[in-house]
Length: 356
Image (cartoon, rainbow, N blue to C red):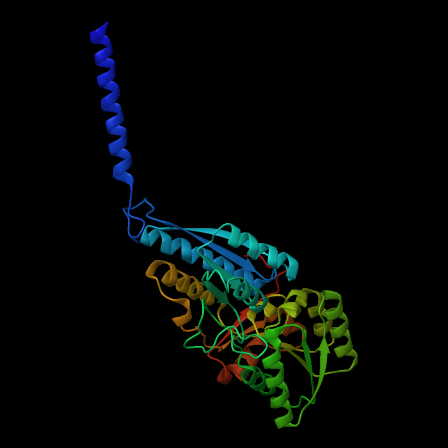
């Protein structure tokens, strides 16, 4: 009996030793960024908050996620993503950021200006790194996210979808030289619209062309504003990268198309959802570059305040061929007319959703 007990005890000792050795062998130093294929050396928590559900912003989020997953696989680390959308509700936005802080995320990503500003305020004391995406004018007086594009300062940096407003109007007047009145459609509460609308007024004043302003803060108000522009018989309408109008585009594009009024806008997502033309950055690439900045900060220990804000070429014009036809225009002819003012002209058809 004693011998049997000794044998059992010996077997248990061997099994325990083997189990301990196995566990010890799979442990990786948390400070390294490389690991054997299939193993994860470290997990980083990243909180992403989107401002509203629209094509451009969803495209950014989708590309941030996919690029972080790709980088994680390459570097042997894991990016644990906490994603939420505040749907332009300030109270919901505050709660989302509070939850991120409570969950001890390693970094926050704010998609669009209002989210970035709220994150900057919420991290002033805890110094959690913040990377913003699609902030049109991070140095604007009403925004003040960064001290400079080269040296943002504090705990924040990111990517900007700054709009070259003059380029949009160069395209507009190349296509329609006889325009007499332009409608400026935007949300006065959107910080991203302030600078391009001021630039639009300056351009039109210099050219001696009249303009009328139409504003709205909700889909219903934007719909009424669009109807007013039609009643006023404006010759064309301009909207910058304004999230409120972008969210409302599906409700107003037919109003403009039926009145034969071309809607020129500051992002391809507008064209995807019914505007005549969108002009701006490649939002898929913007998402990828935002993710690369996140990786540089978390994996390489970069100080976000010393990482330059990344801007992009604003040279792509996206024309909605459905609307082009409804306006009585030919895509090939329009493309040839405006191509000297763009780096690229591409076509798109109307879609009825904003999926990622």
